[in-house]
Length: 245
Image 1: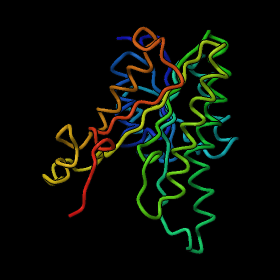
Image 2: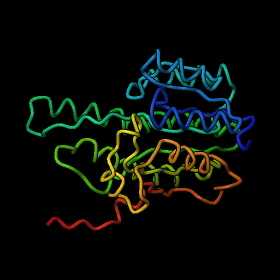
Image 3: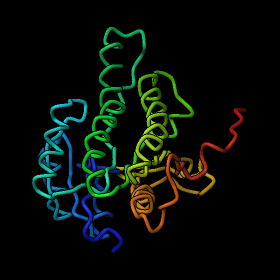
Image 4: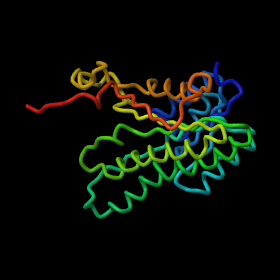
């Protein structure tokens, strides 16, 4: 129970990877705060983990301020922040809504992480430190067509990650990132053999694969000398060369 007595805020925790992280942290003894725009699903997850739900739009500074004010009032501290909230927003750069989509994706995926980190760090400083974990993506390094906003936001998150690590290290705050590859968050049984075969590890990833890494990064006894780094968890997919016949 490495997180007993700790308070962990997980954004985008109403489903998928965020939900799995919330469950893992609760299982490790943390009091978990579920922050999400999806109220019904968010409250359900908070109920599952015995935590607190706060409806939050991470792209809105006032909403983020209210989140951490609620956490401080209710829990008195923040020890771990997981910046997991994110949207895809794929679409052509030539579409009429391209600029609007660009700002929305970067607002949630990148600006949201900065806003949450700033508020969390203010509370962490008062208690001697903590851990911030940014959920980036292997799309920070490679792309498909029509993914400019998403790729830029996830690559930018890695730059923010090491900058925060340097700025906040003096306060005992460690900052690291996880770059998931293909993580199936819906019906795993519907995946095809060729989907699994793309991965040197022999399978597509599951949310629990990311949750275990987040738990490692949150535990100062396990990762206390690790900051400013990113961990790629993709079953080896990004290191595999692919030749088209």
